[in-house]
Image (cartoon, rainbow, N blue to C red; front, side, top):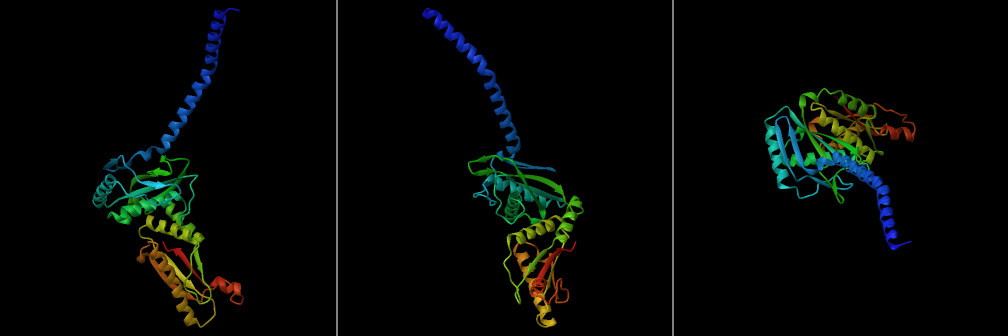
Length: 298
């Protein structure tokens, strides 16, 4: 067999092998391209900070940033973003019926160590709070949080995991969604339990999460109020227990105010020992009666 024949045979085999492998490589490239495009559809908002709608339009290539698993804004905040917030304040000052809905996002792989229902909601709250430090009243905002599969990032930093939407305040006050949330809160109210003669406690994570939900409702329904009612067991005189119940209710009120809830929205009262929910003849029953119950009035 001549060298020339072997050389031609090698070329032919190389061509056949290339033809056989190319379709798989082509399809793989197409599949990869489709995956990249799908991710970019979800994460496109990370490219820029945008406030658009209802006659307002501002955009900058800079954006707010968050570390993975974290709800706190990364500093420093770009000057171009601050300029947009100042312009937003001017617009909202002149638009009494307009509010800004901030929807924060977190990925499904991130851990939520906050007291909020999800990390996206905690991020939205932190963005809102920053806007408030720039002079915009907190009543001009409503917040929401969502969990998604992915978001645009640089290393362990998420780029702008939030979207902004202008909404009418007239559309939020009678929204059935918030009526349902109120009913849900009242059906499973926040109850704080106290030891004998105790008027201060340390709230656990579940209790703090319920307060965050209550705070969310209050922000959505401007004329809403909450009630904190203090109760006691039957140890001591009825007169002293009425005072003790009020002190427990006032503790809850102070805690709520410290969490950012307007003092005028909180009504704290005492029932003393007059409304037990369990038998005061047992230690277990007494423990259930030493409580403060927090509910939505309207």
